[in-house]
Length: 295
Ligand SMILES: [Fe+2]
Image (tube, rainbow, N blue to C red; front, side, top):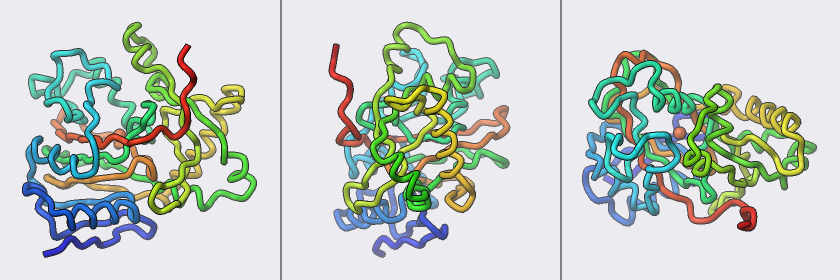
């Protein structure tokens, strides 16, 4: 059975059938999924009972995998999952939900803010793939916003205003907005702000989108409060319900999204219960704008 995609939201997001991710994907399957990603930006695969290795193999069809060993506050040796797998669960290395005041847990709460994965990296992520290994009975949805639709709906003046703006993104901005302010010198170095264009053009479709993320904290050439007010306004605009697809997780769902065209956020759930969702991240290939020259 060939890959088929059924649109599940008026603007974007599709559900894919005709593929078993435990098996190697054919060239035709990969091409159909890439084309689906360009069009729908979010794809849902149901009933994919996959291992970490199978998830990584499937992800590699679309590019290199980010290691996932930077961009968090997990200490070396504390990782629950192999290199290449980002742990989006609420579990410690002992397999139990992390305690309330656990630093990793508090840092991970930043995932509940609207963001685009790895927008804090000079070369930000292309795709993310999130696999549900243990789900919650209530809560824990993931929401996606179509940033192309958000761009299209801007008025002329705002489009002209944002066209050439460059933002600085850092994990310290997103976490800082939650009051998470203490970092080691090593973390400060790792989380140093990077530059990103506020308007991106999709390399295949040519569609423009707003490249927003809670990691964005400043805009070059603007005073910070003015920059943050503009970013807040744009975020409010971009995440209005009409632009949002809400994914309610079922066991063994795999959801794949294009970070260049969408934002997403997790929603709260009962953290006394285990939730095991595991992400692979397909790296992008180019920066959105030149970074500051090295000093
Ligand atoms: Fe994320």
